[in-house]
Amino acid sequence: MTQNAPWTVRHLYPTVDPGFDRYLRRMRPLISQARDAGWIYELHEVPLSDDSQILPALARIEPGELVIIDSHGWVDVDDPARLGTRAIGPYVQLANLPANSCSAGALVLGNCRGGRSEFLAAVARWVRRPTAVAYCFDEADYSDHSPIAIVREILGTAAGADENEALRAMDVAIYNHRATAWGCEKIEPAHEGSLQEA
Image (cartoon, rainbow, N blue to C red; front, side):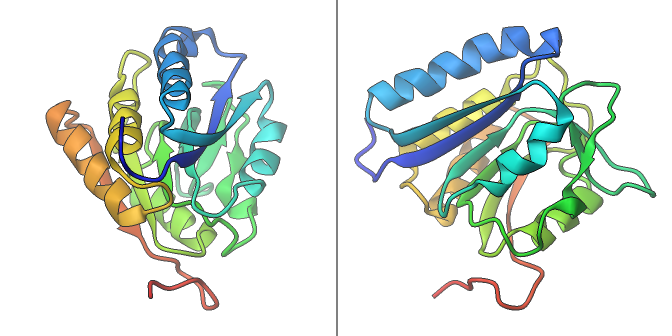
C-alpha cells in the first residue's frame, strides 16, 4: 500500500454502450480494491445512461480529485471537444462547462482524441489549477486498457491531490505499459483568476 495520502476518486462511465463492459470489468474492481487497500479516501461512482448527465457530473468535481472519464470523445472544426455515452453521439461540448471551474488534481481522459490540441485547449479553459492529464492521441479502442495501468500507478504511488506526483505516475505507467497512443502533461489554466502553484 502507498504511504501517501489517499485520493478522492470520481469515476464517470457509460452504462449504455456494451463495448465498455469488458474494460469496466477490470477498471471497477481495481478501483474497489484500491479503496479497500486505503489508497482511496472517498469514491464517487458516476454511471452515465445519457449524454445529458455528463456536464452535471463534471460540474460536481471537488478540489484535488482524481477524475476518470471513461466515455467517447470527438473533436472537429465546428465542435472542438465533445464527450458522449455512445459512439454515435449526440455528445456534449466541454465548452458548455463554466470556464475556470474544475479543481481536479488529475484527469484521466479515457475517450478518443483527448490528446488533440482542441481537446487540451478545452481542458485548459475548464481547469482552475494546474492539473495532470492523461489522454489518448487518437482512437481509444475498447480493448485498450491503458487507463487501468495509469489509474493503478496514480493510486499506488502518488499522494492524493498532488498533480506533480500524479503526472510522474502517469508517465511511468505509459512507459511501462508501452502505451504508445497515450500521453500526459500538466495543463495550466487558461484563465485569469485561476489557482496558481505556490
